[in-house]
Amino acid sequence: MARLVAGDPAAVFTLFEHHGHRVAGVVRRQLARCGVHDVAREDLQSLVLDACMELLQVAEAWRPGGALPWWWAEGRIRAVVIGWVGVHADSVDDHLDSIERGEEFHAATDEDEVAQTFARLVDEVPLVGLVAEAARVARVDELILHCMLDYRVQQDQGDPSPAHTLAPRYGVSPDALRQRVSRGRKRLRAVVDDDPRFAPIADFVLVA
Amino acid sequence: MSAGTLAEARRRHPSARWPAPADALRQRMAQLLDLRGAAHPDVAAALLQARGRLGLDVPVFAERLGVDVDLVRRAEAGEIGVVQLPGPLRRVMRSE
Image (cartoon, rainbow over all chains, first blue to last red; front, side):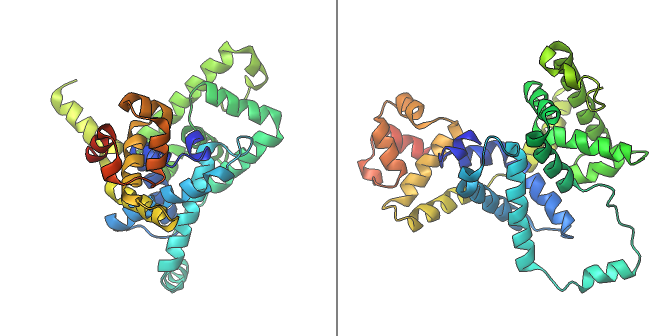
């Protein structure tokens, strides 16, 4: 991200090579949210290319004090997908039909909202900033931290099995998601225990 | 871990499920550079791809190949044709 922000166009190839699968994951999740559950491989690849090129062209707008880099990038990737879905959208009647049929919807949490709220609070609330800093020191990346927050929100809402609810959203099995959250929490806990800077957040449920 | 288990783990890994069409990205880059008026967009895109895949900045890339930093910058800006490139840059381009 630093290289992209610095205007190095070669960084887009590094991004594509090493994180293309993550970009593809964000694209798939956003497509699913937009109701597109079956996308052709060529379209998916094309969307990932679009997203990478978009990141290259807008990266200079990212500010170190703003959203965490991967969350910021996710926002741009989602915008590309939404634009694509808009261009290729069918009539809204399909969606209305499903509402009329009374199909079950799973909207217990809103991933965008959790990410955006946390990113905003990082700037506004020092203790939340401290959580973000602890995550950075613990090498808990944005996606995993995001996952941990989502998991916590589900638990707080009384979800008996957050892993099963969130697994499709993150494209992993419930066991893998549970493991991801558990490992992230352990790493965060270890950093908070070892570094006195993070004492003020030692009682947070996220690191407990 | 047995060879079968390792192969299975590799198959399940997200990187294995993402067949990166790197040539397509290079073509997109060439198109972008062409729109920006580069004289040799294909050469520039191929060099950017080579350097990007190695994850190196321009000075380190130039040093490793034993070529001038400014020459790399000009080539990546699309100012230099393939016949004017020194051997190491031509080779790294062709290896992509």
